[in-house]
Image 1 (cartoon, rainbow, N blue to C red):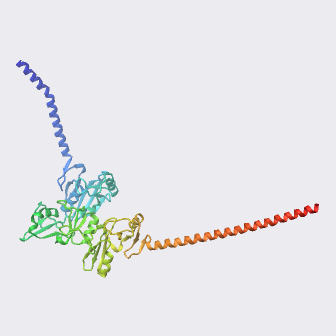
Image 2: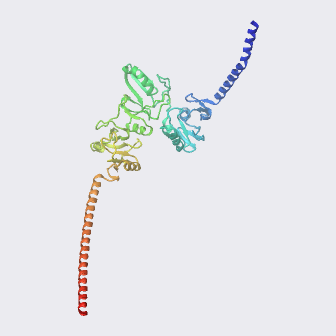
Image 3: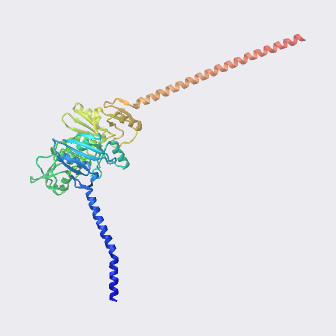
Length: 454
């Protein structure tokens, strides 16, 4: 019996041998495959993301070749680490056509490009940042994938991610990243100590725990890196421009005009001060919509913002103090020269923020004309001269004159009609009388003829 049991165990073991061999074989295949996969992937030099090698971008910086996962990482490495006295190469493939795109970049400027007009779809993440050979290809990709991400030329993209170098390296107290001039935030405490952060995101993370002891907050102007009082600046929130370290999108400007110009190009919203207050009309206190804003730059450098209904009254009051006028383009949201803009009045749709049809601005005549064709109204220039459409009082006058002309014309036609009818009836009557006379004559002749025969 024991012998039979041993035989059964041995038989079962021998029967499992093929299964064990198959498991070892599969393990070897999986391990080999993983080596192949690893061999076909690279690590992004900028962000460390593992990326498919055939999709990676190659940049040549200071005679070193680096792999990058997306066009933004590639540009950031070139700008931050590249020497300004040498040009750097950027080689990528178009997202949809797989055509090679080659760039030469020198000191933050594109020296050459093949093809000539490549663009970047700015998706805000490495996975969604894409490069295309031209704008048409990018727009087609956006439409097919139902995306609303902005598209920028290479030079515009470089401007979005400029990372100024600092002579003395300082590091963020929150995340440890190197502090760059135009993103920095500094808290000065009541004991005289300074806490420095790389961006608004890191500063906000620490604000709640420190606010009782904060004496002042300084933020850097995005354009020149100068430190400003955080309560007297204008911030752009949720734009397409982000810091290189934390992808924070809050950007500070000393000038309201610069803030609105930046917002028109790269999206987002404009708020005032560290607490993020909305921007209100200086005249009536109404919240100002960016694409409906009017900003007066005065001779002394003061910037005054107004809603669509208040610029005329403010201009009459300020007179020659106004040095320049900027208005929000209703179509694009960009800030443009108010003296050269076209304005639409008397349109027949409701636009929030216009308080009953106040004029809205367009940078081009063509866009203002299209708006009038669709929504009614008239197009005027800065001085109020009508350049397209009809003035409402003039239209009413024309209608009245046309109505009077029609009435007189109808009356004249009726008079002519009745006159012709009267003449016709008189002719008919006269013709009947003549016929009667002729008939009577014939009868007389016939009677005379009968008498002669008799």
